[in-house]
Length: 211
Image 1: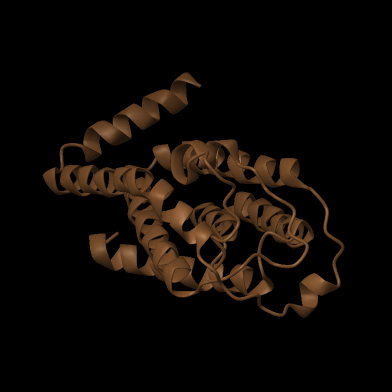
Image 2: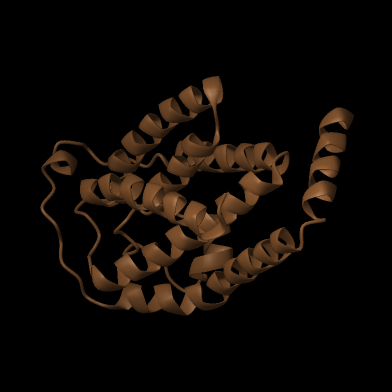
């Protein structure tokens, strides 16, 4: 543990000497901080508007069930592990931060333009952390559908981890996608679109900061 802390401290001390790195990181964190300030009102509005119900042959074959705990377990353990790993590489962390901001902006935009009602058979998925920081606690949010933020998160994990860690995260992603379909919290198209947009966000962030 001490050697890891020392390596992280050394890496960040060296990176912080670069003024360009400083400002890019500060700006990335500043942009990130805007989303929670505006998200609650935005998603409350999304929840109140009417949307369409997409036909989904795959969901229709899957009995709905509540699998919230394994969904949260996979997501939060994976994210925490990814952030710990990225701390050892400040420039990778900066790249991830900007990619996450871009993906979040794309997701907010796509949800705005693609007005959907929840899939038939949806089982409410209450995320206490997201409800506190993003959605607000006045009503359950079930219409933040296209595209899947849960799937996008696991794409980040798979992309930035390497070797055996990537193989494990890919396996966990398959499990997560299966659980999301079982819970009926997303249409199949929500899940299929997430990797495309997320990989595009990673590529765009790389071009933006010359990672």
